[in-house]
Length: 601
Image (cartoon, rainbow, N blue to C red; front, top):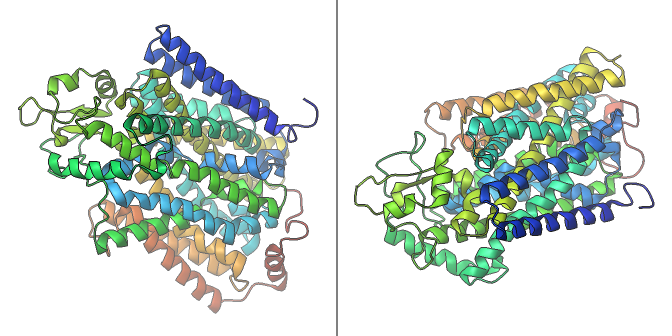
């Protein structure tokens, strides 16, 4: 191909997409020739990981600008795809539809919050941080407010939020690897981590960017194909997004007949797993919980460093704005599909008119199903004939919400090639987000802690070696925490968002939009907001009485007001920023001209 790499991106990824489709067709052919489902699953996972690792290796660099911000040359469309992959985490791909499956209407707050958060990103953050010209979020905090203390506190909050989030992604990759490779979850976690590190360690943000574009292509194909297939089989057409209302009504009728919500007499993995009414929005308290969860997810989206970092990679401020629009479009494709997937999968299990249903069937017959046996073997599913009547009741079927999407092809009786495709897509989603998160942590520690505070004279090679070593150390620690399974994937993600918005949301927003905000105010806002949110999480998680019904998924609602009040009061009672800082804020809000930090880092 003639021209440079950036000019040839459409051709390169067009060939990649075509090659991936050819691989899918080849796997389908091999299935027809007798290849086993487990072998197909392993080949899908292995093939995609090898592709990602190859991209990561070819993108290796020892240039600071390329390692931290991909050389600031990523076109908006491709940055939108990379951002969507960064965003389409294990929570979105693996766990969101499972949350809707088991929790019904209330879990759509995640969709509303995560999507709506990009409105905040576009209007309040992305263009201005790009104009500022920083490498990391703590870089903005440290330079805007001045002094190493503000930078250090921002690094601490970034590490806590991102580390919490990355454990969820490694949890998701472990779940997928465990099923695809038929190994215990604890072993699957380490397989997932190895793939994640191969993608990001050598090339930093440049490698992660081009890998994430490839991962988005895999994950969106893998998410859409099973839904379209099931919808067509069930008679809802090839575009179910506008036509699955009848399926929702059918489920509502079946749930009443089957006794959904009746307590189980046994538990799975130490806790009862019950479905609630699929389409019941609830009353005033349910609405309050919906709104508060959505708001925490929105503010968290606009505070998470690994997302904001993606907009540091575009060539210009305008490109950053356009990139946000493309991000929303690519994210919409999956989020608009998740409720349909949850609905159609639930119908597959409940509707006696479908051959795939299991509720009300003979207990022995259900136990003999291959997909039941395989998911039971890896500890993700269980059935128990509690009342010894030989018939499987709704409250005798236990399934982790995290496996609903991964198990859907098997539940629906789809070809093994589709199961392999979904496993590859789920792994792509988890790996892409984990790559971004690990890079955000390592870059903050290497650039904002090591280089900016500890050793400002470190040369480029030393800085990047430190960043790579930190990637490995943080990844291993996150894998160890993930094996503990302290909470589900969605729970860990909600914590990460709440940590981020409790400590960083207002210091970032006011840093751009309020010239009077000063160093003392920013420090107070970060410290008091973060500590208030963390205290409330500990309070409710250890059995304390929730305030206004706010559970552990919503502690950002406590942290954010404390952060705002502390920052405003302390800023007003202390000396205002100097004139140079105020001019810097004015320049940040002006989309034209050079970046504010037009300097070597």
